Length: 87
Image (tube, rainbow, N blue to C red; front, top):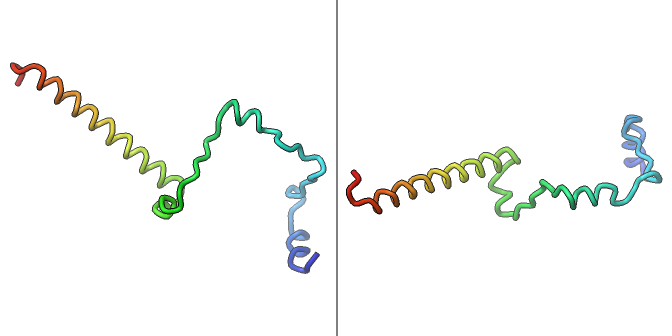
């Protein structure tokens, strides 16, 4: 073990000491399949445009609101054009 690795290991708090011999591979895999995941991987060009997950969420909320507004306007416009006597 080199000096740098040994220093980091010695500086770890006891609560971060993990016994990998007791680890269970795939422990949450079945639950992940049943419940689904909330992780989304962005393409690199998209990821560059957003500094963090809050920025992505804000952009997607704005897009959803714009979509809803556009749908409402389109529905209203279609109703008016079907009834030639409405003003």
